[in-house]
Amino acid sequence: MDTLDTAVAAAWLRAAASAVERHESELTALDAAIGDGDHGSNLRRGFTAVGLPGAGPPPTGPGDLFRVAGRTLISTVGGASGPLYGTAFRAIGAALPAPTATVADLAGALEAALAAVQGLGGAMPGDKTMVDALAPAAAACREAADQGLGLPAAAESAARAAEQGMRDTVPLQARKGRASYLGPRSVGHQDPGATSTALILRALAEVVATP
Amino acid sequence: MKKLINDPETVLPDALAGFAAAHPELAVDLDARIITRGTRPAAPKVALVSGGGSGHEPLHAGFVGPGMLDAACPGEIFTSPVPDQVLAAVRTVHRGVGVLLVVKNYTGDVMNFRLAAELAAEDGIEVRTVLVDDDVAVEDSTWTAGRRGTGATVLVEKAAGALAERGAPLAEVAALAERVNAASRSFAIALTAATVPAVGHPGFDLPEDRIEVGVGIHGEPGRRREPLRPARDLVAEVVDTVLADHDLATGDRVLALVNGLGATPLIELYLVFGEVHARLADHGIEIARNLVGNYVTSLDMAGFSLTLTKADDQLLELWDAPVATPVLRWS
Image 1 (cartoon, rainbow over the protein chains, first blue to last red):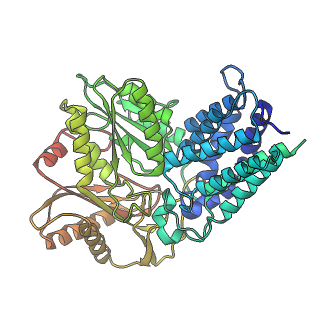
Image 2 (image 1 turned 120 degrees about the vertical axis):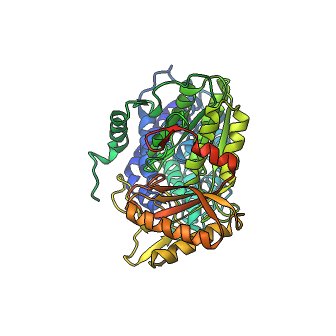
């Protein structure tokens, strides 16, 4: 599977929704430690809504699908995750050409998502947010594209980079979001936003790895 | 967890249905999740829209009515409303002369209200936003998301609401709201944590003889943990912490809000107010107006917050102006 078409995009969104549902209590527990404990339930509400049949015309390509998903996330999740994930998926959608996207297109889309998330939330790498997973994932995908790797290898590389970034948030002190109010007490906890980002990128890797 | 609920998933709609039944003078749209006044103001006026996560009752729906808010949008518990919700509120109450959004400084609220403001602007509606950020427990915005918005929200909404009711233009209402926020500082102490229904257990574990100092209103722990002490000592620390960050001097007057966080009985809040009154008198500061009660809560968190707003003649006059909401009501 070397290009990202509408079917792959739809499968990714379904797999992401399923991953969020399976890990809901884990995300909530991570959030309860340094936030208010609703990250899992909020994301599940949004991704469940993404899976509901839309009233509009059928999507013309993966970009179209991601744009609609982004808008749905913004209108259903709330909190900080709604605008951030919604904006990220809208940026991914806007960056992908119809009807199919290459690995280089995907790298560009992840870079666009990163720029959109940073533009909205103002977080830098090291602030203990989803950026700590998204930034290395985008970089790994770009590297894979430059090396001419296929979609499965690129997605796997992005997922691994996101997971490493997620683990690297543990010793950090939060500087953005509600966890920042804890100051030094936020140290020692894995960031829930970086964790959900890693889950979503792992979902893509799993979808494209299946022949 | 022992709570009077049907199902953790339906707490918000069930509570909104009850709020609608209790307040027929307000219009509660259960689908759009917005609360507006039952009757439109006689003359076009700047509309005030506020909102935020649920769980802070009576904030914000309890302050909808003549003299204060035109609409409130409650989000899920401790979760900001979504932009569609805010936009629906703005469209419903806009009377052609602009809308002021009163937003507490939390990342989610800031982003969702910002997206809503952008959408409203695309509709040709003039929107201004005031960010409430009065919590001195959050010290340095370089290292945090900036100061939280807490008790000052009520004072901003009351004063700006009174000015809007008199037909003041949007720029003037927004400037006043910003001035009231700038003149306000708050600090809170928790004796117990809040339990979010969907989570089912307290947000943090606190030993019987310990308190959380510098908490916000979302169940997150505070800045540090200390032994429980007599109220007089706790109040002294809270008053001094607020004053250290305030430009109040001997002879100044303040509006004082002693606010319960949800599970503290009024007898304790009045006791606290007495100590606040005495401590401020020691500093030569006069409490010109006060509120004692549960106004900006955090579900079942026990404890209190103190908000001091530097008062002047205009602010006191706006404070005394008639208001008719479920919670604040005087003529």
